[in-house]
Image 1 (tube, rainbow, N blue to C red):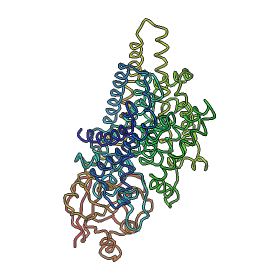
Image 2 (tube, one colour):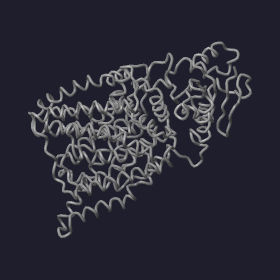
Image 3 (tube, helix red, strand yellow):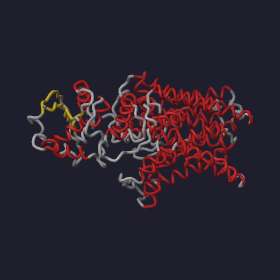
Image 4 (cartoon, rainbow, N blue to C red):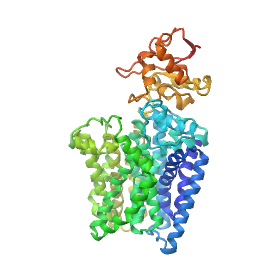
Length: 627
């Protein structure tokens, strides 16, 4: 668990110090802390790379001091002219304690469900995207390159076009890797088990900022970690780690936006700036998701007085300008990716719009059974929606994100494809985004049920009624569906037969062994479709293919994949081997996907005179290239 503790410290300390220096206090500080940390790291990495400096734990610490100093200066400048903002009030001490208990319980249940799916910390994710994230974290930790195109160099090197990827997730994970001494899979898993708790914390902060009752805050902590299509499906598919992280932080966009618009000042403006930039640094789509989530807040404000429109837009203009200057590396990188040669195919539609609506209301995507008690709570939330007060805008957020999911799930129309490009037209991602406001509505249903029961049974203390309602929801949902949620996560990490895994234990052992055999700077030839794309993350040895992705690979990788077995007779192959300093060959079990056995250049290598077998187990073999 050391890796989890280190990950918490890496995610918490810089943001906590920066937020406190900027004048953020209480639940707002607790909730905004992770997002501010990702803003600090996400800005530091690319700018240090642009300056020719390395990103290391020391760099991260120094940049934290810089951000804290800036935040402190802005705060002091602000309070000289404007009084500090008053606290939200409303909750008594026991309310804070009760909400804290609900949040802790939710974080433990969500983390346990995740760990149940992982099997153990250090489990290697089997999906398509994970290998990119694992190799990216190792690359930053080994090279100190915090640039936005650096993480792609592991697979797209040489004459391949550079690949842009927002890297705040990888930067902070690289710090955790360096400080904890854990393996790359364990670092990824340590961050993954925190995701349900982070979402619960963000939603509790949202409720607190909008003056919701403590019962609503406690309820939203529980509903946040219950739906399978929230963070758990993103853990199974890919896993989509930066997207899932961004999803947990998205509600904070509304928190930072409201704090600024209620008190337009440099200190609240700085927090809003860092929140927006932090979302962008985690992933480009996360900023768009934050706009979808918080945009309805502006609608509710403006319906309360049309004169606010001009004032709010004028107040937001300088934030937008400064954000453009501060995060131009991320913004122009994202624009360049959208206009690059990287193909955009999107995902096929899943089903009819009516079926998609049923999936939303039933909290049931690809699962065999709906999460019925979440649906009951959501129904109650809709019934009592008029009592949502300052949070009524969340209904519009649910409608917008829900309709977006229904459109993507049921149509491949050009307009739908174009508008959904930041999310790759992926129904799973839109379903996850819709789940967040639906959780808030479900929590509202539970809280208003408590209020209704308290008014009917006034002799029973309201606290006792709250305990009955929330505990009843936990029990009826079988512990917030932790077993079924864990089973969904397990599909991306475990298999009843380990030999059926995409990356088998035998392949992992071979990759680690190669790390002991190879000298620094030596590369290995490998197949793109077996598990050995993980070699760099697990051993530090670079491979010719470092991702399952076939998109626009380097010419040397194409050549060797097609003709490596002709090494003795083909001068072009030998030249490519020299350029890359290939000294080893590592082969795992051939992919079981149709049409993806070993690549042509890697078939029939056993017994070739230019290779010497040095290690073998049931799933993998390592050859040394003879001089």
